[in-house]
Amino acid sequence: MKKTWLMAVLVLAVLTDLVLTYVQHTNLILDGDLAAIVVPRADYAPVLHDPFGWSMLTTGGWYSAPNRFFSHITLREYCLRVPLLLQAFTTPINSVYMALALCSASVQALLLYVLGWYATGTRRLSNWRLWLAMALMAPFFQTTGYNGQMSIVDTAFTYTFFYALPLLVLLVLLWPLYRAASQRQPLRVGALQLIAMLLLIVVLAFSGPIIAGVVLVLLLGVGLHTVRQRWPLPATSWLKNLPGQAVLLWGWLGALCLYSLYIGRHNTENLMATLPLGQRYQLVPLGIWDELTSKLGLPLLVLGCLANAQLIRRQLPATAEAQRIVQVLRYLGWFVLVYIALLPLGGYREYRPLILRHDSILPVTIGLVGFYALSSCYLLQQLRGKAVRWYAAALILVAFIFTNADRRLNPNNNNGRERQALAILSQAGSAPVVQLPQECTVMSWSPISRPHESLTNVELLKHWGIIQNHTMYYYPVK
Image (cartoon, rainbow, N blue to C red; front, top):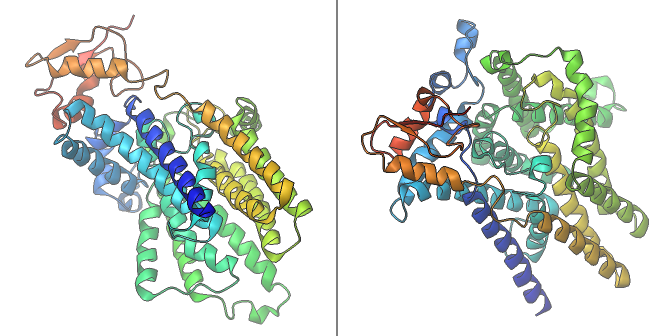
């Protein structure tokens, strides 16, 4: 009976958090890259016709986002189709915000579920430990509060398809490998699952700017770990008895990610803002300092992970599982160091003035959240008496701090004005141009001051049925 009540409370906590996330995301503005990718704009069209960047090899051509085909096509198909389906139940304007919020909340739910696999070792939703892990992690998914410091599901909807979603798929792909390594067993999957994993690797390698870097850091770690294990053996035995399926998967993944990085060098977006490599590395310490001091969120998460590791080492017996969990944090620490050290090689963007930002460090944030759940679940099950009660109280306090920070359902930069502008455009009839009555962004990063700059957005608004004609819009910014 006690576990039944606990299960009910945990399920309610997770589902409530997801519902609140959905409500928050219905109040967010439409970001300025959405229409450019979905329509698509002329500079993004080539990637849809050259998904694997063959033109880079044959002609040495350049275009925007050459190694991001699957992120582009997924975002495009979702945004073209789902709002139209929702219009059976709501207005065209509402359907857009509902579709985007549903996707964001779904990605958050799936990330919680998959990270729960890693934290508990089970995928069964009937297992209370899985819901415990998800409940522990849910407060760290910030929409307001600490979002700008440690966002997981971005408030700019487009970024979800280039960061959170590919990392979710990568976690699914790596799960069999992680489980086999945790059990100290060679990877053994069926033929159909192996083929599916090989195909999924193709999708991942061409799904955005972050996967290739993460994979190559992981591959470096796997390689060094393997060398360390086999170093005492005679050199002639180093390649014997290697797990064939794991070697095939890591080799295929590494090869495609290297190729993805190569064609990514021909991205025209890299030419928009340049900064010498040395200066980029000088910015990294400033970026780390800013991430750890701008708000309470990320440093509190880091301290929580370190405190959990210390409690496991000092308060619990040195079992094999305890040692494994502490070792996971060590590996995570090395991953963070190498990953951050490589970030400047990815180029410079004006919207990331210090190199590190919530999106570029997303693998770090996800790793910390996953370890927090892994170590917290273990401590809750192993501590006894007053110790477990005090520890549970500390976890509740951490959850309260993050939940309180993210309490606003309607963000300061909400879409109220944008919705009003769309309503005006929907009533414009055959007018070729409409001057908006108040300054606001409408599917743009900043207010559109010249009508022709809205042309791409107009194409998408017409597809959604919000406007009936190609009515351009602007606001005369002084």
